[in-house]
Amino acid sequence: MVVSNAEIASIFTQLADLLEIRGEDPFRTRAYRNAARTIGNLGKDLSKMVEEGEDISKLPTIGERIAAKIKEIVETGRLAKLEYLKHDFPPHLLDILTVEGIGPKRAKILYQELHIDSLDALKQAAESHRISKLKGFSEGLEQKILHATLLAKKEGKRFLYAVIEPHALALEHYLKAYKGAEQVTVAGSFRRRKETVGDLDVLTTSKDPAKLINYFVAYPAVKEIVSHGNTRSTVILKNDLQVDLRCVKEESYGAALHYFTGSKSHNIAIRVMAKEQGMKVNEYGLFKDEKKIAGATETEMYEGVGLRYIEPELRESRGEHTAARQNRLPKLIEEDQIRGDLHMHTHYSDGHNNIKEMALAAKKREYGYIAITDHSKHMSIVHGMDEKRAMEQMEEIDRLNEELKGITILKSVELDILEDGSLALPDSVLKEMDFVVAAVHDHFSLTQKMQTKRILRALENPYVKILAHPTGRLIGEREPYKINMKQLYKGIMDNGCFLEINAQPKRLDLNDIYAKRAKEAGVRFTISTDAHNAASLDYMRYGVYQARRGWLEEKDVINTLSLSALKKVLKR
Image (cartoon, rainbow, N blue to C red; front, top):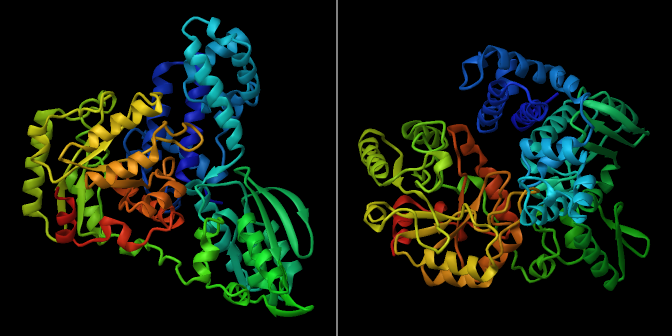
């Protein structure tokens, strides 16, 4: 059974939330929150550390008591203390904490004063204007809460790709270990690498499907067996993820893989194309006058209707059929083409490692360069840098560049764009840097006109080169701020700047649609991890997946360039 760091962190966050709602010792609550933050940013697999007997109590903010709880979670998939505590509260109370603007303190007031214990109850209370009558809750906050409940309900029960990935890979490994399994592929939205996944569709081939199905339902992480047939089965895992497994005939594997990978709209277009050519296509193959002419592989399925093979990430009915017919499909970017990471944090702001540790971790990934981009002082909650500390950091970078071989550290900053579009550090400091990464961290509710004007003004600064997480969204938690994207693309081009694809699993910002449109407008990109510790440099693959969904190629991403070529494009 696999328990990801994200799930372990979530358990400690839930424990802290319920303890705070109940009014328990704030020091204990804070300890669990600090542990959740450490685990969420750790990057290194805690389950593997426990399995290999590492002393996790030595990790920052962990200690022996929390380490014991982590071990319990890894070994059982649950924390008895949290399960016991949940019995004192309604089953859906924690759901309201997913709504932007509601933390444990406000949740406690809403629960005690209005008996709000679910998203539905929260929505009804906001619609009837009962929330704004409470002390500390304004009409503006009430409307914000109402809007956020609608967002949460729209998202439904979906999981971040990065949360599901270890479960999908562990299950795939488990099935491939069975001698009777010939082919195993996790299909569906997971294979298309969508930013969220609702469930898993697994396709297999075997000469004895019934035995393979029996092996599947015996998977240790299974909580409930929904159906158990001879060629297919559905189970619910202990993390509430539904998995559907189908065992198909080898001669139909490609057709089934195409069908169950989707998307639905992509498949419909293929069926229409087949029909226009006097053929029909389904999950069993491609047929002409009842004769099967393709089905064993996806490539022959596409060739059968006159198309080149289309990568799963592109199968969203956004022009891929026409591009395949006209031999214009992009050669999608690969992770091994990335030569450096241009957005990360250290001890100088809210990072967990020092500059040297981040540089050495990047060197292990065979990067030739990194940029250190700690927060500017405007972000007081993360101890951002003022002018003095920014200069001190640049001096340290100079020393390290003399000391370290095989890796170059670039001087930068994640600079706050203030409400009026001015910047949080003066040009006298910015001119000493290699380039500046600008970002919006507040005033998300500005009108589209004001937000667009604000960002465009910041891009006019001669030292700003990259706009970080350009729309400010947090998946399932915070919608993008309003901005005129066409004007943004033009501002990026006019000022010789670049858009970031932020690889943080909760951000993945830009989204795939905006990335494709920006590329069509001539914009170029960076793919950066926004790492807050050395291990989180591994997030790069999620940014690459997002870039692939946006049709990006190596030439579209500037951190695929050599250091000398990169420095040229970063100059104004």
